[in-house]
Length: 256
Image (cartoon, rainbow, N blue to C red; front, side, top):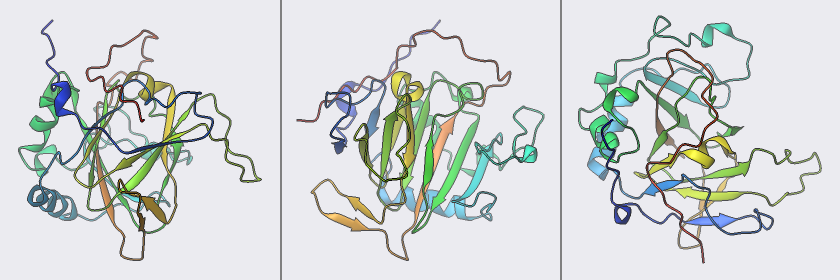
């Protein structure tokens, strides 16, 4: 098979990270996390927002609005079989061609995905003032090993938690076993390997976002963030083999 040439390590950025007090006893990002600041320009960001907003958003999920380009799949606990077509013959979303022509090739050029055809779904999510997404692992039966998310318009923190960590109790006591990564507007965020399979990721509904300079950004009434997540919806939906996959980007950045 052809070799995959990932982005040079220097091309990846060091994300702004905060660690919980009990995070695995070591302040180190989970394997397979990569981050690229300013992956698109402000003009390109505006072009992407215009392209996504050209069609109505789907308000199917209570927590946030969505749109799909390519194949459709909703990862939800709601008992709604109509949301789970899950195959090539199922419902299709908007055409991938509705997105700017430069977008998918640029994502593939990072080396995270082996080829253009590996990305057969782009999921757009709209987060407003009180929006979030519960901690989850992207369904390994349905999705491939590589996930990439492009953030637009506003910052947010994404929380990664080891899958074996029980959920926070009703008392609201912080278990401290988490890492938060700041997703800045126009940044690309990658989950592979351990970070993809051994950690949940979620976005809390916090009103305050800690920025890289330590200041707090308030998610006010006019807050809006759009994310575009690039994935491979597996045609067979067979369970992936439980084998070690070497991530195509390796950003083992330690926070000092």
